[in-house]
Amino acid sequence: MKSNKTAIKPTRAENYPEWYQQIIKAADLAEVSPVRGCMIIKPWGYAIWENIQRVLDEKFKATGHKNLYFPLMIPLSFMQKEAEHIEGFAKECAVVTHSRLAVNEEGKLTPANPLEEAYIIRPTSETLIGDAFSRWIQSYRDLPVLVNQWANIVRWEMRTRMFLRTTEFLWQEGHTAHATSEEAMQETHAMLDVYAQFAEEYLAMPVIKGEKTASERFPGADNTYCIEAMMQDKKALQAGTSHFLGQHFSKSFNIKYLSAAGKEEFVSTTSWGVSTRLIGGLIMTHSDDNGLVLPPKIAPSHVVILPIIHDDADRESILTYCDKLASELRELRYHGRQLGVEIDTRDLPGGEKAWSWVKKGIPIRLEIGKREMAAQQVSMSRRDKDYKDRQALSHNEIVKIIDAELDDIEAHLFLRAQTFQQENTQTITNFDDFCRFFEGDGGFALTYWNGDAAIEAEMKQKLGVTIRCLPLDKADMRGKCIFSGQANARMVIFAKAY
Image (tube, rainbow, N blue to C red; front, side, top):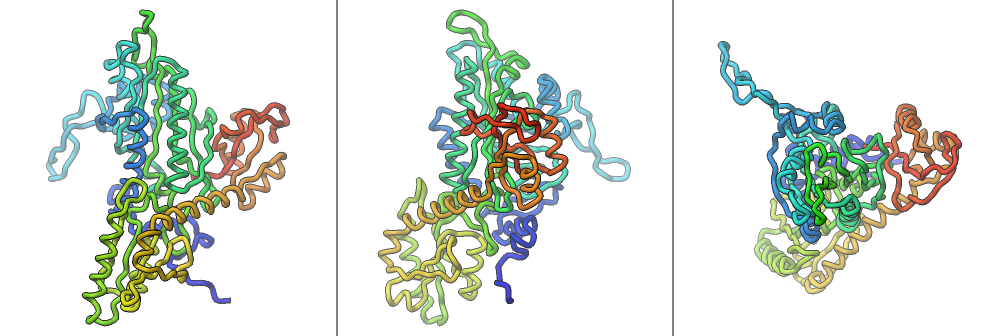
């Protein structure tokens, strides 16, 4: 039997990890950098990140947060002030030990002028921000402090994969200080809700909100909460985290305030963040064997107009018709921004141009040739449908319905991903079924666990699975632990993960 041709080789079924790399290449999102473990994010890929930034930045500011910026380098002594924190990040830290370069006798550049104190290239900023909070906060009137920064992070990684895990990556990190632990916990959950809403409403990525186990908790946090998504290979991706830090950092950095009653108190703090890893999740949630598939709300552009010119005599009139349509579409707004419209005037065959945009994931393609121009029509194709699926629409009609079509694509992508997650999530009540589940295709296993970290470690070693989270919507559910037989165990999600 002849197999179907696909634009991406290998396919998802043939080699999922390599398929992922080929999607990035075909969509021209990023490329490997000369710096080991790092990547160059190209314009189409960076435009996706800019849209993520734009939407989240508006949401953060709407909830009272303000942006600022802290230095890239952190004094080593700051990292040493919080024991759990430094222990958690020590193996990932890049260290600056010299302040300049010198030319040796052989004419080669070598580090020179050792620093009195080494600097850590920012793996996360809790320590540096904690020091600033200790100066900024004196009274209950200074609280709460609600800040966020968009920054780059460096963590040495053994095995890198573009967007999912790189030595340097882009992210935002929110940091807040509160008078009470109750207020800080409310903030922690509120920001988790912001992430979950964004993932589902903009990335069309269904997520599960939950709490991490102690072994998966952020170093120095009392509680870590997360959103977990299922990729098309049925592995989990941690797509965002929100941490209740309690008073760990306020006690380490002496962040105190004078209460209304005149008593000196330590603040409670939080931190929370998402990164360019969201783009990796976006790729693996929606893309197919023909290339990238983008939810319209986050796509760099929404529509590409493809002039189909077979005779140079028709060139000027067809391009004029395309320009007029593009101008009308660009007057529209779609979910807070101008409708993004591309016109591809490259001197290439129509099919080649169309496929290049399929691979880039643009939501809607409009083909216009001599026939469409004469009839004042367009030929519309949607990225979420078969390549050969085309619909003839009048010029006026496409302008009226374009936003509804884009919303329909967004909804379809979410429903498809949600159905996939639901179909590959299984409630398991005995250990044998649990083993068979992960020896097979796997997915999300909902089961009961008694809280024993040794069991958690054993399952990771034997089956390569981890507890992704304790789902918040199942926090009150109790049952018999499938590993120990103990009663009153919590419901958790086990899965293989990135």
